[in-house]
Every structure is written in structure tokens, then in C-alpha cells.
Length: 377
Image 1 (cartoon, rainbow, N blue to C red):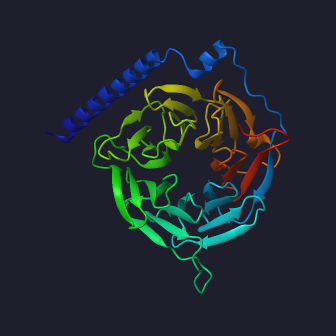
Image 2 (tube, rainbow, N blue to C red):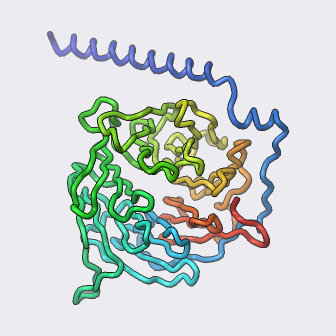
Image 3 (tube, helix red, strand yellow):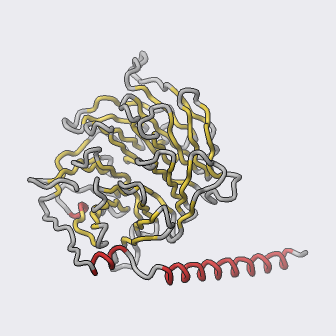
């Protein structure tokens, strides 16, 4: 068979695949006869009201000299760890803005960080394809640096995301550019399970984000450059429980809804979406129209403790607060006083829901708290 014939057959196959994708998309739209917002309005629900002083920037954490890529809160709410292009992890006291640890990393190209449930350790990963664990109680070396207490190596691509299994300092899950997720036993440094890879139900492109179900820690969601999110059960690594379609760009971020039955996602297509893990259906799309038709990418999301609010960071510096029930933006932190000067790269809510932290390419982190009697619901 000649090269020309092969090209012709490839083009025909690609055309068939695209046609089938479009038919599947139209079929899904027909099945989605309503969404959360339309139903809520039909029941007389009104949107959450916000004033410009209801959510205010109360602290700016300055100390990084490069873009902030990732952040995480401790379960006891008053400490934050951040990872930056400057090759350092910084642990902050969120109440005083003081730095308790500044950890120089063996590999400066860090992409993700996470606190352990006990708050005694932090993990990070990046372009070195490894996940490094630091015990915050360890003695520093002669140069004043905190030594690595454990290295988890085995990925064949960059580590894009990591999260400890809730209530366990001994296990964490990583996502990687090698198209897999891995469950690690930190005590031994060995892989317990690999999700994806050679298995047909795995992702077909880089995995960018993971979120573990707080109600059932055996279940986790992954988001990928293949425009899908997938649900996994740690007891069955050989296949994904369910695959979620709908996005038309890289899925940069995924986060479980507080009840554990739903999850949110954010994508390069400029939208956030809400999915039901039991049915696989998309429940709602959160999409703010822009005049130039070039929607900024969604980089990070978080839900309020009740799930009524969705916080979403964007590449243009906006940080929308969405009413999840009515799919309306109730506030844009990017337009408030003391907002970031560059893209929002990461964000997260404190364990008690009383404060939001955002990280940015402007090298700063900001803590936002509700003014007056208002709290994050």
C-alpha cells in the first residue's frame, strides 16, 4: 500500500471519527432536556446576593520570587503551603502571614504541592517526574535546607498533581504527563496501583488534575488533556468506573462536590461543568460570555462547604464566584481592590470554609475572607 493510499485512508478514518463525535454530542444534548439552573428557576430560587465588601482581601502573602503554581491548606485551617517557579515551597501561617518554612527543592520545576492530613508533611512534584515528601519536623542540614524524607519515583512524565488520601499520611495519589495516575504507599515508597497507561479505559493524553472523594476515599476523579474526566476506584485499577465527556479543551482542574455524589471541572474551553458520578450526566455548565469570543481558560476551582458557591480562577486574572444553583456569577474577585495582577493559577478554600486563598503568576498569594457577618456557605 502506497503512502498516498495510507494518507487517504487515514483522512477518511479521521472524518468518520469526527462525524461520530458530533453525533454523540448531539445525542447527549437531546438527552439533557434540562439542567440545574432551569429547574431551580422553575422552583422560584433566587441567586445569592453579594456586595463589594462581602468578600475582601484581608492578607497578601509575599515571599516567592517567581510564579505561584500551586497551593494547599492544612485541615486545621491556619497554614498554607505554596509552590513556585522560584524552586521553593513556602509554608505560611495564614493568620499572621509569617513564613514557617521555606524549602529549597532539588528540582526547581515544581508544578504541584499538598499538605498531609496531619499537617506534619508536605508533598510536591514537577518536571523531574517524581513526588518528593518533606517532613516539616525534620532537622535542617548544615546549609539550612530541609532534607527530602521520601522520593516517590516511577512516573515516566512530569507530575502535574498530587493529593493525600484523606485521614492518611501514608498514601497519596499523583497525576502525570505519562497519562496515568498512581496510588503510592509513602512508607515503602512503592506504587500500590497504577490507573490508566496500557489499560484501554485510561486517559489518552496527559493527566492534569486529581480529586479524592472526601466521603469515600476509595473513589477519585482525574482530568486530562484528552478533554475528559474519569472516575476511578482504587480497588479496581484496571479500568475507569466512568468517563465524563463534554469539555472541548484540556481539563485543567477537577474537584469533588461536598456531598461526594458530584464533581466540578474546569477547562481550557473556558467553562466549568458539574457532573453526577452516579449517572454520568452533566448537570450544569458555567460559562461567562466574553465580547472578544476568546474565553480565558479555567485553571482552578473550589466549592464552598455547602456547594452553593463555586470559585473559579482564570488565565486573565478573573476569579468568579458562581452561584452553582442558578449558574450566575455573583462576584468577580479579579475586579476588586487589591486583586492579583496576573493569571490565577491555583485556589483553595480553608477546611472550615471561612477563607479562600488564591495564588497567581504575580508571585503572590491572597487570602479572601467574608466581611461583616457573612461567611462562605
